[in-house]
Image (cartoon, rainbow, N blue to C red; front, side, top):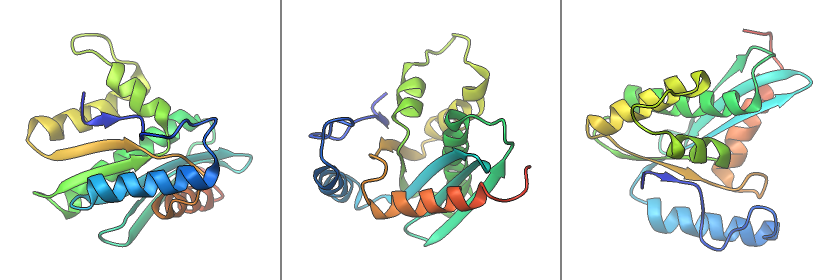
Length: 170
């Protein structure tokens, strides 16, 4: 699917220097999504627990939630994406959106799902929520962004998810 973008030209996750990755990511986002509402997402898991978060640049709005401690980092990332989809439903119908996540694995896994095949349980809600919006004509792109290279929106979502992960278990 062309709406699921797991790469940014010129960035190799393991070999690109941090500053170069930041510059290329910011340039790519600015050049391709300046007319989109940009929503950054993140998931976190550490000794304090698991959490998911999203931050919308257009609304300068962050939301985070503590997840069950047993929640995997992959599931936390998917929860962040689902939070972004809910934000789209609640705030900005009719606009163009880009959900920017640092989970390459989530994007690649969603892209590799095939209609008519069994979908793994952790992916069902995320896949169905995106598919329903695409089918109804809502323009949502899911774009990967490297983590921990100081891309502002990604850092805001990261801080929100880490902070939320320190609260009581849901």
